[in-house]
Length: 564
Image (cartoon, rainbow, N blue to C red):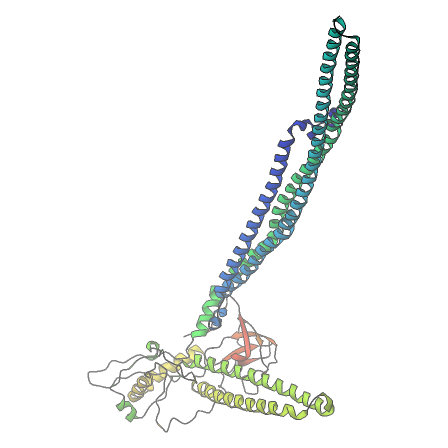
């Protein structure tokens, strides 16, 4: 009845105690094996994340490649690298969660499982040893009872032989009778003892097989079922750890996709045009010349150089004439004033250098203001510090500001020289008509000078060889802008927007004053003279320096650049 009530209990395998011990040990070994598997998976995730991070770091742009950020495809790739870095971080999260939620928990649980299993099998072994000891004691009582019975039988037979023998004395017969009685009494005592131990053993055996061992096996069954459930929970956690980071990984992949979709070939092409726009005007046609006669070349009124004296023409007549698009750049060190660059690129470099110097000047001024305030505090509160201790640093900052301002003035002079030499922007039709007029009216000597002016220096830089009379410093002037369209004509369409980076007074005719951060409409791009035409509303429009604004052209807008 007891076994029927226990149902599918392990007690049905009470004769398989050793097999159950092996099975439960195999279950613990399996938990340790799975823990090792998760640990190796965690290490793989960490190594993968480390390799992904190293890969992302390896292809991150260097400082010398900062110009790459100008292009949408480069920015998309850099964004992909950043998202890949976040992607690697999620794999580190997988490893961390597996370590904390699976490896650590299973390691602790395995130790508890070993302790519990050891305790249960200790109780089972102890019960088995008690039954075996009782059985041995019962066997000893049984053998003693058997031996005493045999001795009593022999004593009884001896007494009967003595009593039947007429030659034996009465005293010997009495002695044999007493010995037989004693043996019978000893056999009876052994019988009683054997009966008592037998009853006791049967009770212990019944309790062992129907109470103690079933309880031990029930505990082992509960322990094993918990282990199996724990394995199921761990396997579920193993999947959930991956599932939890899928939304974030999906977001990273979505960001990569958006970055790829943000690539705009038109914008990048416009950026290439803007980056490598030289500011040169196309050279005029080379006229036919007879053998031995000086070469003639027509020039436009916006040609890059002025005419030269005949002496310079004659002295350079034997030199090779190289047109500026085919000038080879010098691979050596570049001059400080960027004179090796074309006018437009030189202007941009000089302007960028001036902006950097101004930023350094502003930093120095901020430090000076902070130290001045500190000195004032020290003067008012001498216990906080000595005011004179700040003077050496203030003097050093003043010298730094003076040096930076002198350097900025030097670059501003070069910038003014470049802006003074660059041609004034005009309408394409007007520029073309002027070119034809110049071709028809320029004397031959001027053409030769123009050809000579386009000769390159040995280092491949753009040079202008002028006589001492012409080499006087060019005073920078604000370009004379063409008059705006008449009221009768249609208003120019907007091709984009721009944001003012710095305030501009716009005091000259044709310009417009803007405030820092102001948003305006762009109606005409920079054509190489450094000015962009903008509109505030239907009544206010004019030119602003291109370096003062950040331009955002519409994707379908056609650029106004006619030549690079």
